[in-house]
Image 1: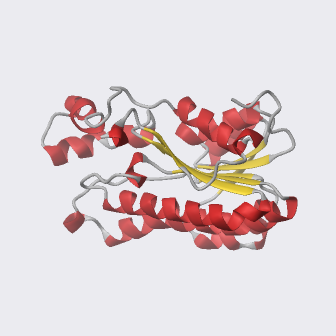
Image 2: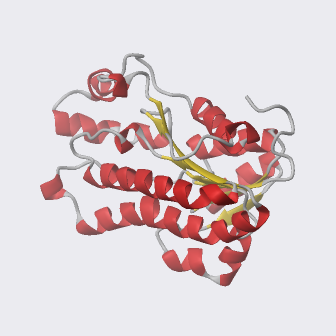
Length: 256
């Protein structure tokens, strides 16, 4: 793992930073000396995490492209050395019942927004000769599950965006990688339990064992801090030769 102060002098932006994986990543990066900007649509939550880590907050709706492309946003992104594309949302439904606007919103937040943030951050990274793009993908960036058409589509798209960023950024000292956790102990996962129970026709008490951990060899949820530790390593100088890769943290799901 990177040593104390390994990221001193770097500026990091973490989307979805008000809770879950994002908050854990913000704490980990700040603990290594980075100045952290916590971005989230939950303005109060983002501000609270920013106060905790001694950073700044950015109240932003990642589904609104105009908020990502105005002058103030682009100036802020121009000073970002480490971009962690973490924000996400979930909706579970069969394709024939999946709402058109719901599908569009999920792709806007989890694919279009990372593209716009990367596009705005790259010129500054290129100028400084250093950049780290860490995309929080998912095991669903590598595998598919029923009832998650938008989420799986977005994460597969994010994998492709990450690889193109890696290829284009390599000559400029910029790396781009994906972190692919299984089910993480976050509110996003907890909110799925009732939907999953209804769709699979099982009690809510059985969702964790029979659905979420069914493919995992290690029968527990991933902890946010575990994901954050991998994010921190990918952001460090130690990972300078690691790019265009996807790191499964799925308890053996993709080993099948």
